[in-house]
Length: 98
Image 1 (cartoon, rainbow, N blue to C red):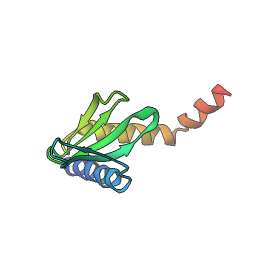
Image 2 (cartoon, helix red, strand yellow):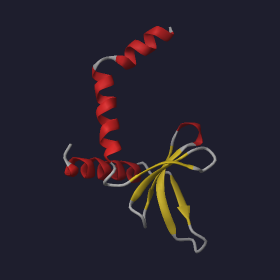
Image 3 (cartoon, helix red, strand yellow):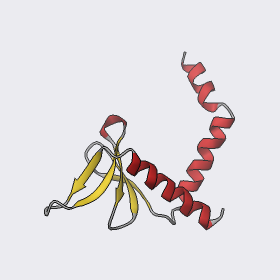
Image 4 (cartoon, rainbow, N blue to C red):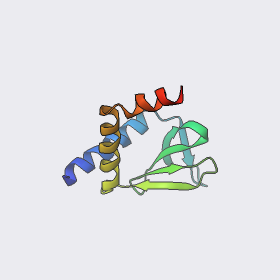
């Protein structure tokens, strides 16, 4: 895995989150500190402006995951999801539930 590929993936995610932005967090002075998007079940994916990280929050606004441009886990998850899609795992799982 190339470190530049991880950084590129991270910044593509940041750009996507900011493009779909429907949620902001402000500090006590009213300055925007996070921009992000609402997800299912009241979860959210937020880009933390001062820290340069992506945080995933649960429905109680607890951080359940945080990624930076050096987080290799992002690239591993991308690879996993792409491989599962290619193998048809998603379609097979839907068929088994029916």
